[in-house]
Image (tube, rainbow, N blue to C red; front, side, top):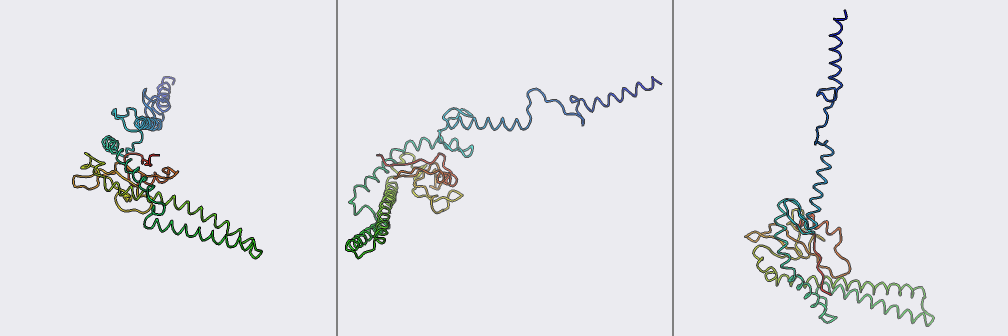
Length: 283
């Protein structure tokens, strides 16, 4: 009897061992992780960390993948953008002095004009309307002040006119500053139009400069409002057609710099190879 039970016991033990031993492949256990392997979650995290490290190194001016050093403000949207960035970096460095002269000359021309002739077209009409309103309110306030002094006026009305007059003069100052910026932008655009070949120099056959270039989601079609950068540098085909946007510039004449929202939209639509560059008149 015992001799018959021994084989059965051994068979049962062997079956249970196969189902519970984690080192044995099968449905009952999980194979041990081999030395040097990682689980899926760890692999994703590791890949993300390595990718982030390479991107950070590349943008900080250090050697990244393939020992390619990119400018810190580069925007490589795709792999093919890397050689484009390296080419465009040389171009934008070469043309920077000419663009800055166009900015400085625009500001100098505006400020050299007589005070009553600094604004043109619709900008002049806007400033004139704001000034006329401020002057009219000053006259009203003066008349009401005389009436109050003579005992015939309304002190409450005088206070209302004083507040309205003060707001009107503040609005005139704001309007002048805003329209001054618009006027300088217009002169700058004319300077670029007149000088773009000279500014580009030897790059004129491969690149072009455009002011107020419109961009839609495809990078070409017209789009209203703030998606019209002040100046763009574009790579062109031998036939003179736009190939891609190399760089975007924004001319600033006031205290505010490039706003993050504007930068995001322009990067999304124009897809320049670098972070948008701020232009300012030399102090």
